[in-house]
Image 1: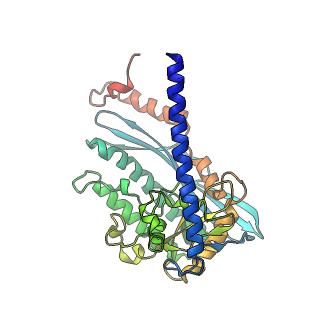
Image 2: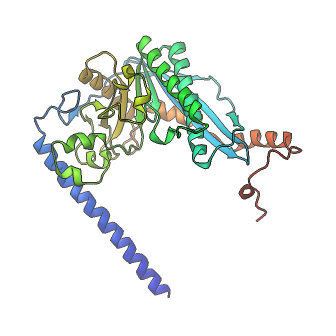
Image 3: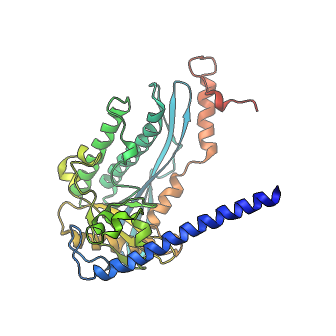
Length: 360
């Protein structure tokens, strides 16, 4: 029996390894073909080549990074989201970090956001994500107005994602509208304060660039892959792709169509590789004025300079710092949870879910 199980396991592993290897070889061969065929092409709204070199520059600017940590607690008729959003503000002079500030200055205890609405199961995760986004966006607005950074970096996408949009009859819909309004306010304030708004997506699963390249390579239409898995064979360290619009048709995009067209038509992205030992990074940004190719190159140089310190984890240092400061510790949430439960111990209306109070 033991021998049969071992043989079965090895067969499964070998089959999985074969499929992964075959997929990688196909993507590599296709990537090489695309590079050859698009050598002189002008691509995307920026009308650039497929691969553009990026420079590591001596930074002379102030750069803010926004991130948050969150946990949640579900009871029978109450949802609690614990959120802490933190901004790290790095000032550089001649390429060296001259000052590091944080806002709030001292990491506060996480805020407990309590909702007593009876939400359906599919709305619970949406509610959590929207509360976190709202907290981050409001902090970004505060930081831009208070510190006047040259760049403000967000961890994650520059707009809410598909999963963040509730159903039309959902009780979470008003919160979603608040989040959209907060993002539009952020876009307006960043533009007014001449602050470049950039978002870095750590593990992107986008396919927009693949859609664009499919217009020049029919084989891509049949291949199921994410942008990053293809670009892993196209980009080398210190290179980026052309800049392209966030969506093919903003009127058909489930999130962008909810924004003012002034903003939805001005959101772009590109991919950047800061290390040969890490996959490319998706960079999204708002560009309301400057020539797109120039703006993309300016942002790429800044993000590359912030991200190339570690060869196996290429991510902007200011966002890494914000993440470390914002990350919630279990004991912090436990303190708030215990105080809350002690207050509610005589109230039968607040009951912990059965699965959370099993005696075994």
